[in-house]
Length: 151
Image 1: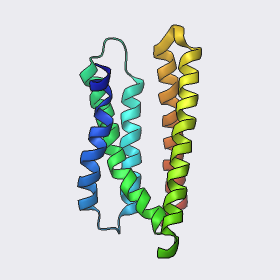
Image 2 (image 1 turned 30 degrees about the horizontal axis):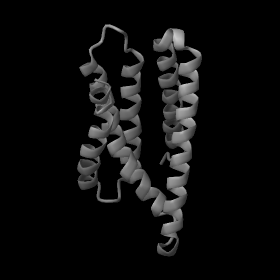
Image 3 (image 1 turned 180 degrees about the vertical axis):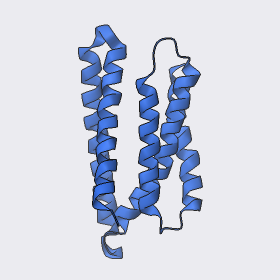
């Protein structure tokens, strides 16, 4: 059941990475990144509302929506990062990007599992705190993008 529950996010990511890659001609990377972050934020708001009465299908749907956002964000964001340097430095840029992504995943997992462990008597609250923290970070990045990329 857990496997089916968490399948939504990677499924959305795989499907919509392909779709957004075909829609984006490389000139819309910033817009696709911003759209992806907004879709991810919307899914997080939905996941914050989850309660014990919700079905697994509904949770999976919100995770799928999260994956849709990731499918728009990730390819465009990687393209932006890779275009920041010349062809000679793309290997180093890619390695640095992946290292930072791995550190973020490990740090987020550590923080999230610590919060859930500390609140093991109220698992629902622990999960909501984790989604709230993630939503705050995504909202902050969206705000920074809007402020620093005004035309």
